[in-house]
Length: 229
Ligand SMILES: C[S@@+](CC[C@H](N)C(=O)[O-])C[C@H]1O[C@@H](n2cnc3c(N)ncnc32)[C@H](O)[C@@H]1O
Image 1 (cartoon, protein in one colour):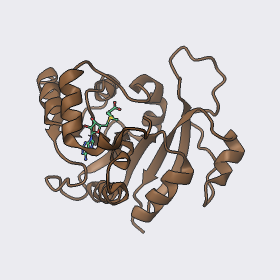
Image 2 (cartoon, protein in one colour):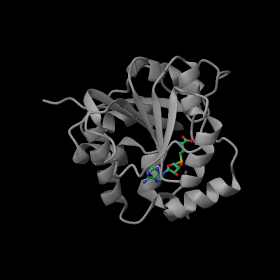
Image 3 (cartoon, protein in one colour):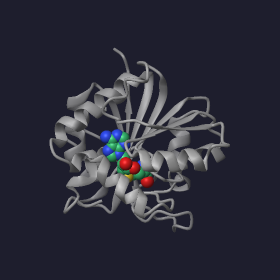
C-alpha cells in the first residue's frame, strides 16, 4: 500500500466499488501460511478471534484449516461482507458481519481473545482525519479484547510511525516481529530476521534500525497485548 492517491482507503464507497469490480480473493501483504508460525505462537487455537477489515482475503479460511474454530470477521464494505457470507455459509467456524472497526458497539467489552489486523489500520491512516480515526479504532480494539488479549497488527508501517500511535492510544505491551515482504513457502533460509524471534525494541525504536539496517524490505508485525495493570 502506498500513500499516493490512497486517501479513499478509509472510505466505505471506495471499498464497495473495489470489491464490486474485483471480487476474486486477494490477500494484502502476506498470506496465512507465511504468517502461521507467528499466529500459532501468540494465538492459542481455543481463543475466539476477531479479524478486522477482513476483505475477501483467504486468511481466515487458512486459520480455520489450521484448527482455529471461532473466527469472526468484520468489514466496512457491505459488498464484500455479503459475498463472504455467501461463500462461507456452510462453515460454522467463521462469521462475517458488516461493521466499522471504529465503532464496534455491537460487541461487548472483553469479548475476544485476539484481534488480527492486516492492512486495516494502514487503510484508515490513509484517509482524512486519519490520526483521530486510527485512535478510535485502537481504543475499540482495546475495549473488545479481554485481559491478556492480543491485537496483532500486520503493516508496512515502521516503528518510527506506528509505535507513537500505538503507545498514545492505549497502554499496550508491545513486541515486534518482521517478515520479508516477499516471504513465501519456498523462501530460501536467509530472511532479514527470523520470523518468530522478536526484534529488540527500545523506547524510540532506534534499536530496530540497529538490528535490521535502514529501510529493510519487511512487513512489520506488532504484537500488542492488553495487560490490565
Ligand atoms: C488493505 S485491505 C486489507 C484486507 C484484508 N485484511 C487483507 O489482508 O487482505 C483493508 C480492508 O479494511 C476495510 N476497512 C477500511 N476501513 C474500515 C473500517 N473503518 N472498518 C472496517 N473495515 C474497514 C476495507 O473494506 C478493506 O477490506
